[in-house]
Image (tube, rainbow, N blue to C red; front, side):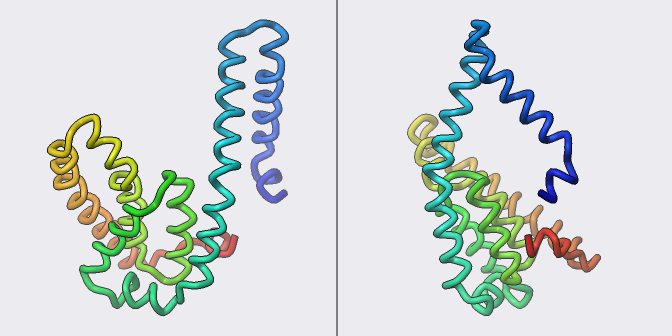
Length: 179
């Protein structure tokens, strides 16, 4: 309800989209029908994928101790923590709708912001399923070259941005951390 009070236009946009999607078959508007089918297909896939993902994220939140995350990914961790973040990101399946809740859990468990940024960036470029798909179409040579170029850039830029935030003592707002 808080979101609806902050963004009342979202209700209007949602209502217009629903009217467009439901009205398109009645007026014979083919692009609207295709948009509606694609939307329902994507929504169905999300309802199949998200519940198990959120269960796993909940288990991660309960089973992985804050001290463990803080030791390996927190402010006292060394350069190896960036490798851990990349390896963890490589195992995520499903894109950012999976990586964002995991990044939130890492941040709440006191991982460095730079490490969280590395995790999010690496989740976008080096997930195992995406890598296999890419290598099957473009070849392993291309994939290895892309990794050799992109991963150091991701780690470097995330470390710099994380240090910049740390120097300014930036913290995410409590409403973001606590929901």
